[in-house]
Length: 444
Ligand code: ARG
Ligand code: ZN
Image 1 (cartoon, rainbow, N blue to C red):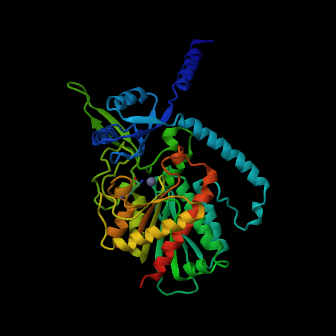
Image 2 (image 1 turned 90 degrees about the vertical axis):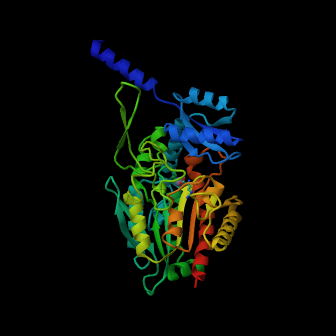
Image 3 (image 1 turned 60 degrees about the vertical axis):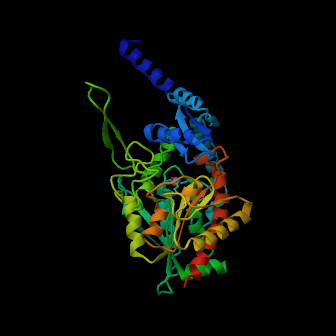
C-alpha cells in the first residue's frame, strides 16, 4: 500500500470507530434543587437533547446524551443524587432495527391487495413528504365535490406546505372552520400519520356514516398534515440519532460568538433551525424557550419569523376558525390553554375543560388509553410562544387544544414509536376529535 492509501484507510477506520453512541436516560428529580440543575443544563448545554424537559420535582425527565458527554453527565447526576436509569441504551440501534422492520413490511404489503383502493396509500406506515403530497392530490382528484388542496406557504428549503380543505362544496353559506395541523415538530412522526388518518376518515366515511356526513356538510376542515416538511424530510434522511431526532425547522444557519478566555479569539458556532412551537406571538421569548440558535427550543429572531408559523397565522386570521387542533407526541396529554406559565387559564376554562374531558373519555373508550388533561404548563412544562396559546389568546378561536399522542412516558420508545402503533393511535384519537367537532357544531 502506498502512503496516501494507508492514510486514507486509517482515516476511514478512525471515522467509523468514532461514530457517536447515543443513550436516552430517564431521570427522576425529587427536589427543586435537582430540577433547577437540570434546567440549567438544558439552557447551557445544547448537546443534551431533552426528549422530555424538566419542570418540577417528581416529574420525569428524558434526555438523549452522546457517549462523549456521558461520563461527565452521569457524574453531574451522581453529584446531585439524581436517580437515573437507561430508557434506550443505543438509539441508533433502535432506529436501524425499526427501519429494517419497516422495509420488510413494505415488501409484504406490496403483495396484498392495496390495488383495490382507488387511492393507494397505506395509512399504517410512515411516509415521505412526496408521498403525502401525492396522496392529498389524488384525494382532490377522486373526491372533487369534497376536497381541495392548496399551498399555504413555502418553507426555507422551498417546499410548499399543503393544506387540504374538506367540506361539502355543494352547500355553501358560512360554516365554522376547524383547523388541524400535524408535524410541527419534525421527529414526532406519529403526528402527521394520525392527521392523515383523520383526512381518510372524513373523505371515505362521508357516504357511510351520518355523523361524518354532518361534519363535512356543516363544517370546513382545514388540515395541514405536515406543517414542517423541511424538518420532517431531514429527520428521515439518516439513521444518525442527531438527524432522526431533529425537532426544529431547517432555517438557515445563525452564528453566535462565544468568548473562550482572556487573550483568546472568540469562537463562532453556527446552527440551523427554529423551534416552531416557540415562534408564535404569545409571551414570545419567555419561559421554556431559548435565544441560542443551537438550542432545541430556539425561539427564532422574533415572533412569526418563520415561513411555517407565518403561514398558520395568515391562514387562521383570514378564515372563520372556531376550533384549533395541533398534534404532537409524546406523553398522552390533552392540553388546553394557557401553557406559558402554570395555573393560567382563559375565562371560558370550564367550556374547554369539560370538552377536553369528554374527548379524553371518548379516546379512552377505544383501547383504554389513559390521557392526562390540563394546560401544557400544569401537566408537562411551561413553554411560551406555543401555537395553541396563540390561537386562543390572539386569534380568539373558541376551542384550542394540543394533543401529545402515544406513547405514554413510561414506555421506552418515545419519539421512535413503531409503525404498528400508528393505526391504534389514530383510531382512538379520532374519537376525541369527533367529540370536539360535535361541540363545535353546537356553538351558537
Ligand atoms: N411538547 C410541546 C412543546 O414542547 C408542548 C407544548 C405545550 N404548550 C405550551 N404552550 N406549553 O412544544
Ligand atoms: Zn412537539
